[in-house]
View 1: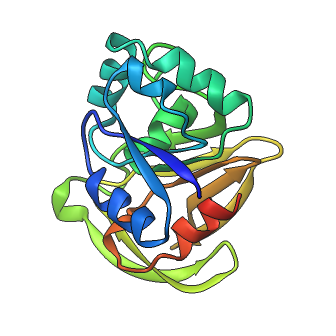
View 2: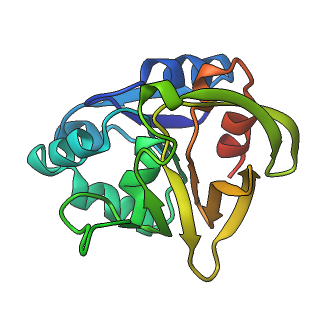
Length: 189
């Protein structure tokens, strides 16, 4: 059985937990540094407020250890704000060392679709999956991917997902759609 650590310091983590449990995974909430010793073998970084999540990861002493675990090969799924935490660069920032994990070689732009009123639902082909439902809420966009990073999908010619080895980052919220396929892909890594 897969044991998935879900970052639970802020944001939309409960829906990820429910989706993963429905697929048979065991879930561990990561709320403090001590939780990082709970023996999980996969990681989910949920949506929410990326600035708050970054600050809490650093203050709680979790950022460096999570970065090490991801770099060592632990599969990770970052959705919306979770993608921002993974990104090596955020547009408009000179350095993201203190605000993100920085393990996925992508450049992201926060709130690329505007404020809450710019939120929307759509469907698109994604990572070999036909007609995947996608919910975008104050979503970022991936403006550029580095060498060795695979683009998983686009919506209106904008990159909405990328993968580099064990890391998947998406700009949308798969946990809100009722479609388990992206979580299944994550559990298969």
